[in-house]
Image (cartoon, rainbow, N blue to C red; front, side):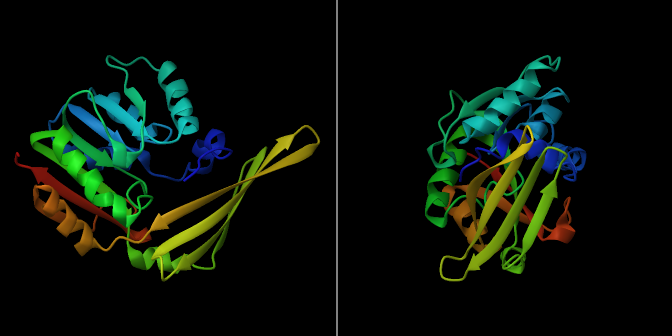
Amino acid sequence: MNYGPLAPWYDAFTRDVPYEALADWYDALLGRRHTLLDLCCGTGTLTLLLAGRGRELIGVDAAPEMLAQAQQKAAGMELSVPPLFLCQEASELDLFGTVEGAYCSLDGMNYLPPEELPELLRRLHLFIEPGGVLSFDFHSPEHLRSLDGGVFVDEEEDALCLWRGEFDEEEQALFYGMDVFTRAGELWRREQEEHVEYAHAPETLTALLREAGFTDVELLENGPMHEQGRLYIKAVNLGH
């Protein structure tokens, strides 16, 4: 995954995302747990919303360009405990200590190839305290397949993003190329990115969570954006 040219425009192109509803949802799932990990935090919008509700956040993302946007937004806010942002690959997660809960939102888990999931979940089990909760959302395989052949446009006054989806049945993944056009004086600059999202079956994720040591694994289908094929999972770490 490469969030380069898109990073400065990501927030403008995702104004339709119901971040407040997502914050309410994860707030409820994570209960009173205070120290939280936001895995694949992107530009930190959800991180900062939960930090503003009095929680202590660590945001982890592999894209320095996205984290730069998160840091810039955090600097303009008055928070009792500003989030700590770390640039790490999810499958190489390495925290300084443990957290009471963790979540991963908006396709973060879909960006991870199947072979990286066992190690990521093992690390999450290691860094989440006993009694802690892990929750994440992901696109159903059916929804990713439905985007095959789709062409979509996001447009702002000084930027335009055109993306095209192609689902590969052999790889069980959605490949989409993105052309980002930004205004440069009287001209337009064109830059490109390619993203890949993997189709993870709910039963596979559930089995991998249990193998990693999580219990009480629940599949939830009534969360924000569920009408767009978004599913949620909640699991508990009862200890080592």
